[in-house]
Length: 309
Image 1 (cartoon, rainbow, N blue to C red):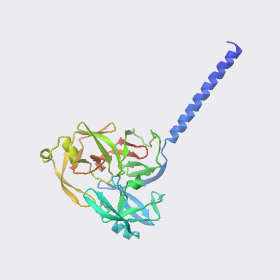
Image 2 (cartoon, rainbow, N blue to C red):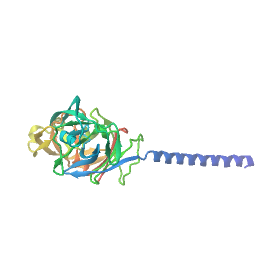
Image 3 (cartoon, one colour):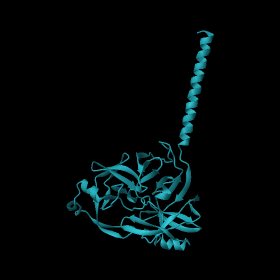
Image 4 (cartoon, rainbow, N blue to C red):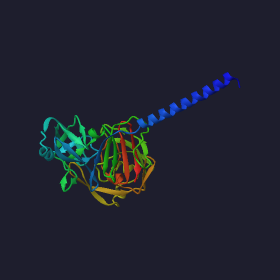
């Protein structure tokens, strides 16, 4: 090898090493950029399958039901009055939920904090609704999708923790979990539900996670498509469900063989068969699912991830 050839060989080797080093550094920086940035960590209060978020509104303490199934954040009329929040009825709204619909006004607290994080532009609907109880008293309201979808959510029901993260744009974020994550594509519906596919009885059905539901549900018409007619359902236990309007009776609890989601299998799930009348999903996964599955909501990333407990 001549001196010139040797020089070129050394130069080529050095250039390759530099390129490899740069690629490694870029990869490390990209990976670091895919680590979600924590905004607030909140200790949840869990009671009878419901998760409650402590907040302050204009200096007053409030406890709101964590409700990813609710499109809008809402306060009970009595809670708004206790907190000294003036109700505005200039623009009235009708809020529909399981069990009925109610007319609402609005409140606009000036200072809102959750987990030490100050929230700007916060406002809530206000109405006379019946909600899950916390400490023997109804929850002060619902913390819904209009607030929650501004973040990535880490919902750890068994760990009694809700962590809010700045929304990420990475296709594969590095989650702060000690267990493997199982993800599936999702989309955000007009109801602010993060909707994804599940499989039951060999059929693919749209679903979303509703942290405000203590049980999991399947729409009666979807159950019928799976072969569960009225005669078959009469063999199942009868139950009632409580919504924002009133108690709905005559529902049935049916045990399915399995529910598959994100490559995971939920064996022998018991779902409430109910007339859901939803325009974006046939299945609701509630607190009974979250009790054994940690969940990550990536609204902007259009993905939901689970880790079995």
